[in-house]
Length: 279
Length: 275
Image (cartoon, rainbow over all chains, first blue to last red; front, top):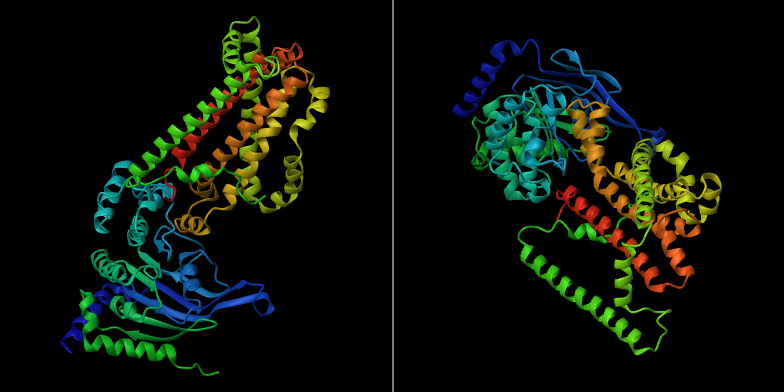
């Protein structure tokens, strides 16, 4: 009980700053469709009627069956895919495209292979032209230290392991100092051990930097470990099924997954995912 | 058309540091056996010529070719010949780069432009460009211009086709990654498409060098005022076979040097490639 009350007081501390009045991200009746020759009528509905609110500084994890449109939804928040209906508001302003206050970590590292690690990390600020040379160098140094890649700055991505590449991917997203960090199954392609280490590192980084995070995964354990709240999507088209509060204490360590409370949360999410939807 | 044209040697370049010893031994072995092969060939050739089994006019000894090679550089008019061939090659090659690179990238970028131009490109690429020499001579005369034109026609297509393939094969997620950072079209092009295409273009340039040298040489054989090809044609007409072979060796040497220089550039620009 003491654990959950600690978590609540942390949540209260966050909401006390007035965030209750203006959530960071609001979706109202969001639908996303795109043309697809395979779909009925040539239009595929990825997401339909999604309503949700994400508070400032919150860590939200989205889970759902594969093909439920969770990645599409995330890409819409990133500004890569336009919504077809409803409203998607970022701090009260409709999302019309990508913006410097958001960054996306892709499932595949998607690093520029001809740029060194350093120059991959500085890619966002390079494009946005917001930083001076010295300032940029300092930020890249900080980020490489943060993701544990000191001394690898001058390597090319092809010489790094999958886990290291994904660290660079994360550092690249953090380099624009996003208020909203979007992560699309960033650890799905990694081996189990590397994945666990990366989860722990991501937790540390998020606790340190305190931005809002939306993380898409199909890994239930990962969801419970990372999230303040887990959002469960239904499949085809994606809709919000339910929210599950994860009131485990922070800072959270991977060992938390051995606790009884952790298992019961996993079970609840599993049940939500495997309930046959009513027709 | 969509496939990249390249020789297989690019792949072997980016060997990892750890594999260097093995790679070094490979290279030493290649050097030893390569030298051996060439040596055996030259010695057998020399023996056949010296034995008198074949008339020296038909097959001069390598030593005779070597001395003709030396004489060639002291003969009158050699300066004008080298200059003519050099100018034809350089201007024709640069033209094919200046036109082939941007046009190829545009074709790769704009799908419909590609659809519109690909049949024509395929047609011209399949035509032996040297077959156009007679009409190029009618259009441009027997001076430098007709040879520049044939070098250009030989070089522009490999460069163009490879540039288009380079733009097309870019990983889509790289473009998305740039978009997430709010990159403009221009930035996406400059930071993603252009660098992705460099190794492809260098492969195309290497093919263009070969085509260009053929263009210079055969173009001059068919009719010219100056040039190494003309020198060879004249030597042939007067049965100076050592001089013919010396001229051929000169063109071959130019080809080897240029191809290797481009190979070095390729290695440099694709050092990031996966091992």
